[in-house]
Length: 109
Image 1 (cartoon, rainbow, N blue to C red):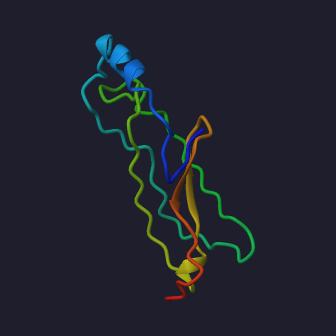
Image 2 (cartoon, helix red, strand yellow):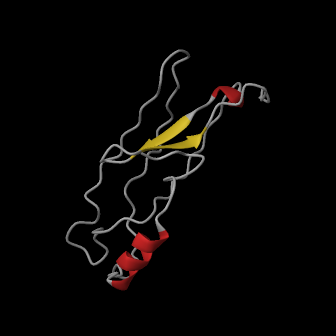
């Protein structure tokens, strides 16, 4: 379980120290660009717009992704009422992260 406001919850410091004693570090950091979408899409007024980006994770290259620590997403959009927007990023394993929540009092256009 993961809470977007509080993270993963209570931590067991003793267990963390025990795990740290046998910790294996990940390999050096690499950059792999997953994909780009440049087409203009319209968000349906009463439905969600779902965009899927497929990637081979740079398979076979020196920058092949074997471990993933973070993802960077760049989004450009226009909206008539930005407070109505809600954005999520869903990982291939199904972890859903909120990027932007709705803001009922934000009616700036």
